[in-house]
Image (cartoon, rainbow over all chains, first blue to last red; front, side, top):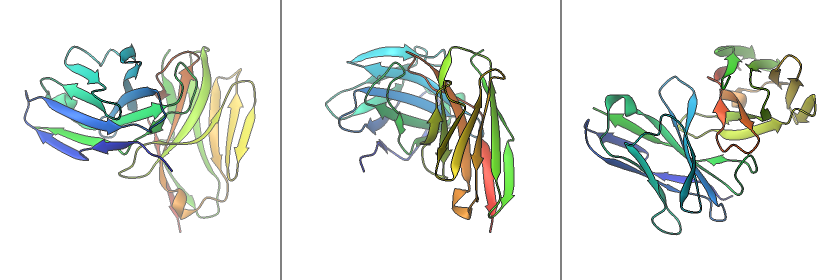
Length: 115
Length: 112
């Protein structure tokens, strides 16, 4: 069964450093998402991406964050200058359809630890 | 308005018992209510979902009950098994929105 994959599984970085989290969505999916889950808290939406554009973003997704689909298979989340409060599990998801259509399938997550 | 409130935070059930997790929402524009199951080290996986035009949906041992007037919905796990031990999230989404809004999760433990 096809699945969303994410690398690395765990990333440790120093505060102020840039990190790039990588995701390979399911191959025939067209809509891509990033969510995060701070330890012990709920999963929160960050951004959705379709046709090489951000289609929706939350208030969490400020100028420190960016997303990119650099090639036909990868989808990345970049945090320019990490803060301690960015420590969280980051989940990538993908779906066939967007705007309320299509199930979102989640990857296993990347645990980001900012020291 | 955008919140989904979930209870209890944690739940312990004997094997063979019924596990019940409850959720409530405020925003009447929500029209899709999924439940996600998350095992340690894994991402949330869609378990079952319902739209507000039905009051109940059953898939195997899992049932969603939906009360539109009360703006509440719940997950029932019948004949709970140790393999059901996981964190369960209720969620909601508005039509034409991309984002899924999650509840805070319920950590379920089924005693063998």
